[in-house]
Image (cartoon, rainbow, N blue to C red; front, side, top):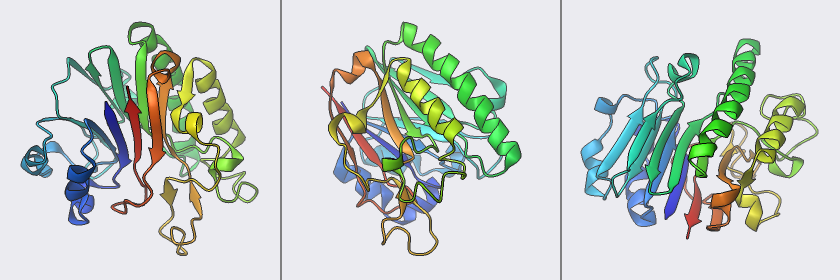
Length: 253
């Protein structure tokens, strides 16, 4: 199974930049999108069907043009779980899961901490999601949680760890949460195969950041230990330029 995760920063804008053509070439079995910023009726669902994604599931935020996640697949999922059941999370359309046999794939868009109120919200989300994921993997042992975590875990994951140490996305408390998340029985699949520095998935639109590779690794494919044993590839596809993020790809045997 080939899984793509991509924060598209608005699916309609990304489509104008060639997203659908790119998806057709990459030919993944499952595509998880974050920050779609659209309702289903605003999305070119027929265009996605034309490139093989017959099965499309969307979870949009109540607030228009904001957040939202999607899962596209070539085969029909056995089950789709919309949201987490936690109302404050689900109003923002941040979690969507599809089950394919024993494998479950979740598309997640973890909040960013853009101001103090949103940082409090982010910390609450992180704590509640950790509990939710731990309960979920008791039943869905082969679970892959892909998406934009809005956290760089280690200094190797950010271009300037010293200057950014007090910036949300690289705060000690956020990094410590990710360490705890992994300690509960998840693997960062990219780091299973690579310990290379300067591998990022997001760049600011300011100051020519992408051309200078001044980036952050915010997007992850986190697999339970049971599923990680079946992952044979996990890479960052930095050549894709439909968004301020780039996609990641995980292959499961």
